[in-house]
Image 1 (cartoon, rainbow, N blue to C red):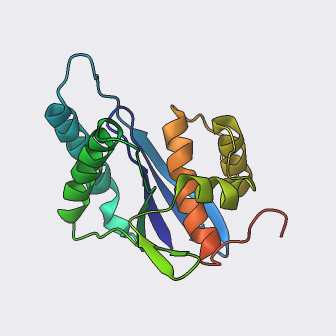
Image 2: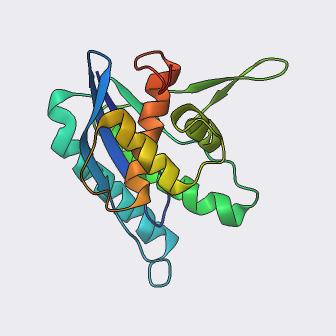
Length: 180
């Protein structure tokens, strides 16, 4: 099984590919791109994110992907939402070029199930680290424990993207949660 996951932002999005064999996840590829909010418009930055995602997927599409997943986002204002959703659009346009569709995430609510467009950040941390308010370094450490990865993460966004994929795999019972 191969999982392509994105930690999507307009400033520094990350991507990860995880391959699972015999219940053991390992990182196949990582990537990120940095845009400049001081000199680049939202539109240009969204295009840069789309171009980066297109190139990353094109490089790795040969073996296919079984799941495409991203982190969900709920900002409190248009100032927070617009950049993230612009990046989401860029990544979605890139993946759509290859016929890829993001998986939905079912969250059990008090009265009914909610369908989300990705995994909530606190749920990623809870599933991968064991606590919903884990720090970035704790997420990175947990990713290393699950995958055995000893290389460098160029940014926390790469380890965060991997954690998103791992959270999906844990939730679906495709890998065992640490300590279980």
